[in-house]
Length: 99
Image (cartoon, rainbow, N blue to C red; front, top):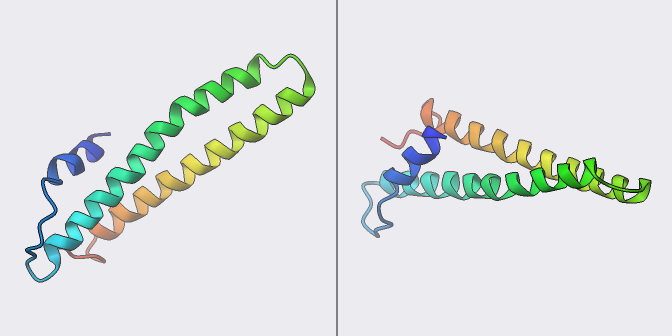
């Protein structure tokens, strides 16, 4: 979570002035990281809600529907978290050198 807030504080403005494209690339990286973090933050309460629906489903059909949705949300969150890690790895390890 600390990395997410660091990216929010680094994202101060989107100016047209760039230093050889490095500032623009860094701002795009920050925007992508923020968007992915917001998506995960929005999906988490939905996953909790679906887990509650799964636990309290009265019949087998509602339980199967809730389980399917719950697994879809969990898979989506895992994919996004992996993308965030990959983005941070590529930007921090020199593959996308923004300096």
